[in-house]
Image (cartoon, rainbow, N blue to C red; front, top):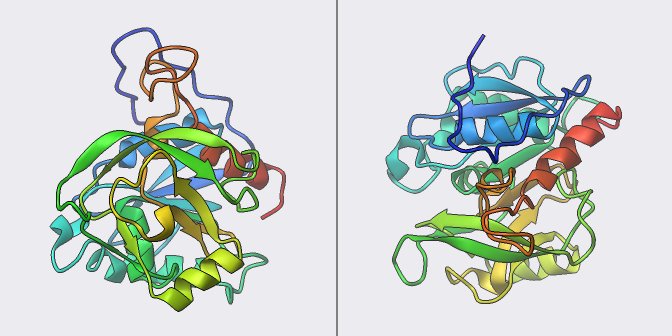
Length: 260
């Protein structure tokens, strides 16, 4: 049994009681940085975090999967380009696709590098390229929730403004005009930057979903905004923002309710 590394200070929230059946896999690739953070977010949201290894083609019966942030395979070739061919991804693509043999496709959340991997695996359209200013950026970022009908956003209100940490170098979302038009017309833009575009992403897009709504990718890091004292500043005080936790409680509550 793994032991959670204690956090400094007294702001840490206690993980919610695990909800029956809500097992969320967190994949680790070589170069992944935020897998422990994502696993903690799952536990704080009331789910059971299940570690998944990139070289294992089994998902071990999980109900949802998080592809966390980092620099898989050192971002060689392109960010996410090599991770897309990892054995675990072959199984994930099959389970998450609309043509999955399961009763409903697997919910998948790609965060930062995970978003890049999802585009490389063609589970989401478009691509991620270097920020238009060619610099790494790290800051708290305001987002508008444009779609609260996905597996990962159902507990947000429509047009809710949230604050999530952003840290990336290859964060500029690009797609051709036809793809952008389709995303907008079908309501598949999930998160949009507000208060300024930090990386040149087309249409200020910060996150998108597939047509079925089970696969979501976003560039900012919700797993870094899940407990008071460690997240962005908000109206209640410095570093108290926990807006990111809602992505995890959304999918976990859905799974626990037997809607998968």
